[in-house]
Length: 112
Image 1 (tube, rainbow, N blue to C red):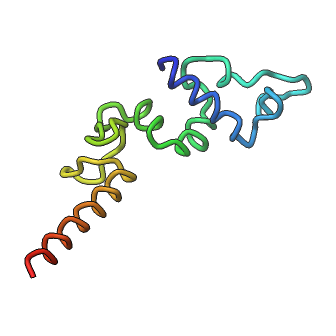
Image 2: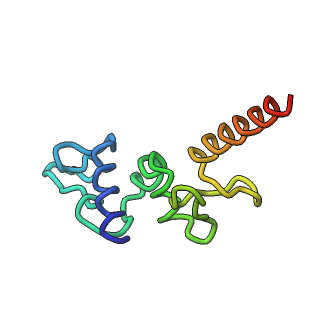
């Protein structure tokens, strides 16, 4: 995990239901224990990997699905393709679809 991915993951740690003021409730056995995911550059918390990391699709694709991920042509972000023909991440795909529809309607109206 590089520094930017670490910072993004650290922000996501606060969304974890087991995170309480810097401590992990799962590891609490009578005395407070620092959340290990908030202090490391690796994915060591299984709960974070399964429940929290999918909230950020780009980071999830970059860390867990390195072989399957693709780079979006428009924004340059990584995403998991749903077909072998996809070129855009889901957000950019919607924008590109609207742009192409807009251009097609304009050309059709200009021909009339």
